[in-house]
Image 1 (cartoon, rainbow, N blue to C red):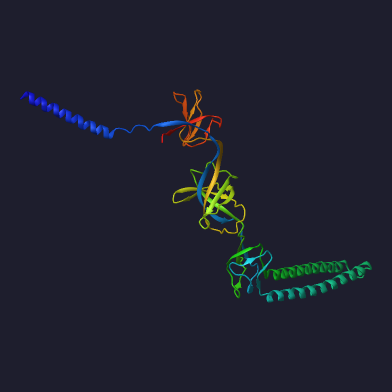
Image 2 (image 1 turned 90 degrees about the horizontal axis):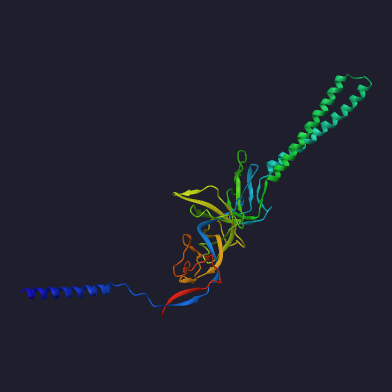
Length: 353
């Protein structure tokens, strides 16, 4: 009986050992692949650090001009529509000038009448001077004549100013484009009456379509390295395959907060022909904030060196110094390393085919 139990225990132990061995074999770590070492030659490359942001194509400050009227009147002619191309000095609209011309005629008549009175007062003043010299009149009479002459000269000067103002209003009745561009909006139509007594009515808005810039909204986490003068490349949703370039021209000193997200406006110029761009186009911009030149090493590169000073490899979160006990030091994965040059010899471990 005791011998049977011993045999059963031995058999059980053997079975458990076999099962455990099978489980261990199935779960054992895979052996490292057989590798061989070959020499790697570093290549000189230029790596850049870019910040990506969304933006909008905008008109530059002063690129849109609102053209209005300085006088009141009825719009007699309106020569442009939305989308019309205009040149600087081109006539946009003409107001009814009948009332202004009547004012000019009235001012001219008043001036002529007062000039005649002035001539009469001048002659009277000269005659009284001669009489005063012979003591035929009193000094008071001579002084009164001189005062009348001075007052009449002031009246004539006022009449001349009134005539100039009336003629100036006549010139204001012809409204011209102050700049060359494209009419973006028309606020007044032909036949309407405009009143310029309290504010300047706007006839049209002219934009200069080539005076564009790109405004990018840069997150507060990325704004630190952005500087004026850095190169910018962007595309638009309208032209996703076309790259536009420029440079940072200004950085907003205050933040723009939208839904709790803090952004800063970064304006960039647009180089070359901007004729295909339009205001308010959505853009995706890349701002080049840094550029570094150095040797580029493969991800599996290790430098065969017994030097105690290890090179500095730029890692994803900064720079760190590393060395090994075997005199072999790793290099940042497929990156540009500082403290190393193209003359350094590197070996790479590659699996056997």
